[in-house]
Length: 208
Image 1 (cartoon, helix red, strand yellow):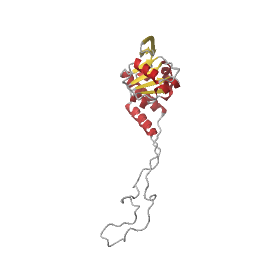
Image 2 (cartoon, helix red, strand yellow):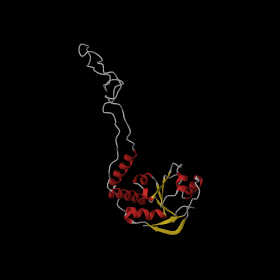
Image 3 (spheres, helix red, strand yellow):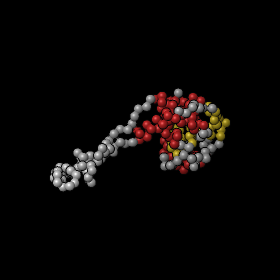
Image 4 (cartoon, one colour):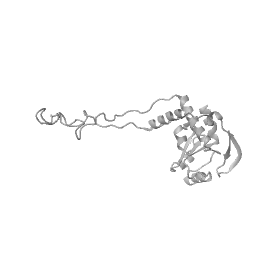
């Protein structure tokens, strides 16, 4: 699959890039995508939730009332989860939500997500952008030149570029990542996938 390469002014250049069919044109596997996104979201959870259970609540262990003859139910402790201020019954405890997925399955999920974007014609290839200073105004100008101001955009760089990353981090609709950290969730969460020339080779190398 051949696509045009655009420059920073938003104009198509004479260059073209060939995108590998083994990554950008496969039959998407929805279940692989589901598992990879599920793992990504699970890994975002801190798992530090905690509530006090019966043994941890600070109350006297004195029996509240006599066992029989009151006409009501038995009551032995203020710590009971059925009483106001008592411990939580089966409350949440700290835990780790992460789980393992095979590398090949994660690769298949990323290929599937990218192929969906290719089918939707939502992939744009950009010349490697050059920014020497950290200036959000300049980055906004780049996005406007590409006519992506109103679209949630994922910009994939071939290698780390601090001026571009720092210039974009205050923008709600733009996320900048490097090709080696590309994940299924970010691809699907964006309306437009903008690949720099340098990122295409890195993506093909990692996913093949």
